[in-house]
Length: 342
Ligand code: F6P
Image 1 (cartoon, rainbow, N blue to C red):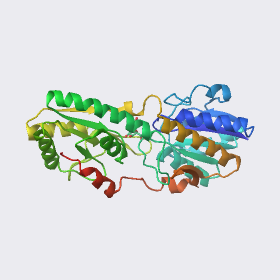
Image 2 (cartoon, helix red, strand yellow):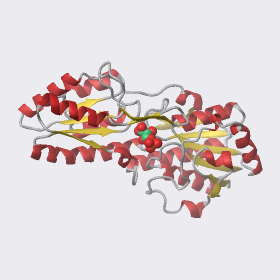
Image 3 (tube, rainbow, N blue to C red):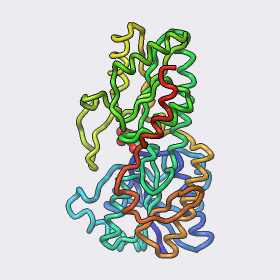
Image 4 (tube, rainbow, N blue to C red):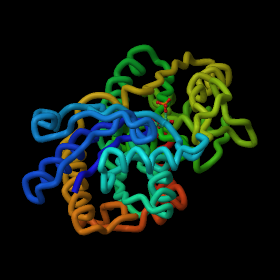
């Protein structure tokens, strides 16, 4: 078989580990050939490829980003997009695709499957918000980066008797905020799943100052104040209809400073959470996903996504994974609340 590989959506540590595993096993165990598509769905749409053999995947296991490039291209938003993909795949002699991505990239993969394109999906995203899999790779690395930042911010918060607000990514799911906040000992954690009362947050902050320690507030970029509008930098939508989030941290720090009379500063971790080398957990998960994805392709089991369930890698229908976002359940948030303000 000749198999195309692409990576779409926001980059994430571990993408290269998947590519390496797919190509290494695909060539050495099954004798397949590979072609790399550039920049997510833009590659098959415009027929932009790069060579992808054993030599090209040497040394990439620890490298962040993706050697194939990425984009948020949505072929269903482009006139004749699906027909162009089908004709480019036919011209290039590509029998099947491995699509590595999150809800948007795999949503396209699910729809293309229904239109007769042979696709196997691999779940990636630092947000950990895909259904049908316990974890996506990239999440563990993002959490560890955010945790280390929180550890460092504790010491400067104490030295200057300040509130430090740490804004983390995650879009409409609070997984990064919850895990990084718990691991880093945050005094308040605010998630998109539950609107917050800014007066209650100010109360937690004051209580923490009374213990002679300084508060760290972890806020997810998608968190919202009660009955408030989401605080956005701009209203532009990408081709999947997502707004760019961000700005809640700055807004919250201003509110907390005004309400408590204590200096409050904001740190926005942003794309640092997606950069650099993957953790061991993410390297292993990404590698196992890649090995199982090429097995699925070899067996002609298309329209599936590889997923982690407990410690096993299983195959689930692509449609199951993309049907709805996996958000933080209320009982997980309740666990964390024990530490708020103390
Ligand atoms: O989905 C991953 C993610 O990093 C989200 O957490 C964040 O909201 C979004 O991507 C940012 O996207 P971009 O890098 O395109 O601004």
